[in-house]
Image: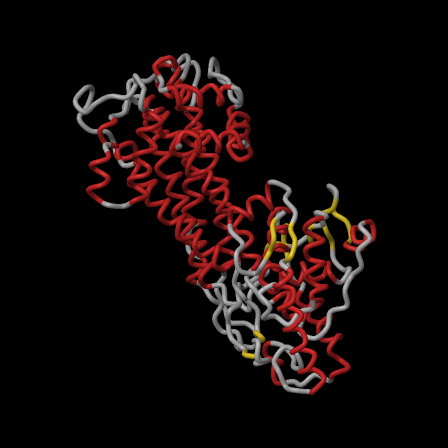
Amino acid sequence: MITLTGHSLSLHEMNRLLHKNEKVVACQRSMEKVAACREAVDKIVSNGKVVYGITTGFGKFSDILIKQEDTEALQYNLIMSHACGVGEPFSEIVSRAMLILRANTLLKGFSGIRPLVINLLLELVNRRIHPVIPQQGSLGASGDLAPLSHLALVLMGEGEVFYQGARVHAMVALTKEGLSPIILQAKEGLALINGTQAMTAMGIVGYLEAEKLAFQSELIAAMTLEGLRGIIDAFDSRIHEARGYKEQVDVAARMRNYLQDSKLITRQGDIRVQDAYSLRCIPQVHGATWQALHYVKEKLEIEMNAATDNPLIFVDETVISGGNFHGQPIAFSMDFMKIAVAELANISERRIERLVNPQLSDLPAFLSPEPGLQSGAMIMQYAAASLVSENKTLAHPASVDSIPSSANQEDHVSMGTIGSRHAYSIIQNVRRVLAIEMICAMQAAEYRGVEKMSSTTRDFYYQGRQVVPSIKKDRVFSIDIEMLTDWLQKTDWLHQFVLNRLC
């Protein structure tokens, strides 16, 4: 059970909530702060004060005063009108992350929402009722208005949810679980949709996959190094300590660890003096990716625990309008992650080329069992090159774009949700490129002699061979690529395998 406080949620805990079926509960002290903040909202309404989003309209309508008797209609209309998302829905895991993040930010006690709204959010998480939320339609300021409106619809008994393997109307799931919808009161609709939880949720799901993929990329690269009789001297700790980047030092250390008892690696001068950059510079390139991922992790963990709606209500009942809903920090982070993860595929594709090109190694041409008659891995490299090229388009930064909205009241936006979605697409492409490298590296290892591999890479080889058999003759390699890609994504064994080797 994970306790949400509004201040301490970590990516490790999010991983447990998203992938380990852990349940969640609200901190009682945080709930008390939520209740106290709600009292301030009730006073504002009863006293007829003019406060944005509580007794006024929204956006360009912020100068229009709303009558007290219309406060419920204002919140209802807000959610209904803003539910303009389009396209395919986010996956259930992203929808689940959005519920958790929205509850966590509301628990900070700055949003003026009733505790019962948070309780319903947590009930949806624990009962695995996940809103159907279209992916497209957010500008990333004033937060993720359209996606979060689709989330808020479910609290009102509207919209659709994923429930028990089906896509159903929200009331079907709520009724079956004995839950009642909520009539939103003053400020509550705005508090639910003014924030960055769509881009942050998508970013978290992407980051957790990217982190695992980065570890896997090193182990696959180690196997490639053996297949190409690579030179281990380039991973000498003195080289990397001389430059000083911790992540680079760490990658080199892991590579040495993986290859420490290999009989396939060479020393400088044994076969050649230096390797190509795609082998020799693994610590420098992969290490730089880790630097970016660490930056992304830091920003995600801040945003997960941030108050991102507007206005915010403070302990002295002061209500201040600001711009914490602006997604620029996450937009930059997602663009950074796109570029950093795409580079893992860029360098991987170059290693694939060295494995299959007979002009670059002494391996059989395209790793074919019968060069000429059978093409072997020839077109696998084409597929990898295509994915790498696609990533270059997706890696274009979304954060450099902005389109004014709300009659130019909201005249600069982040496009962070687009960035997070593109980052996730890149991660999927990178995994496929790494799967192709692994298929080729396993084949190269067979030619060199599996018995000569290091104990670590040999274990990894045997696990991989349970998924993809040796290439004895040409077949539909698309099936192999997809099977290995799926294995890399889903296997907990592989992540634990890598972590165990680091201990």
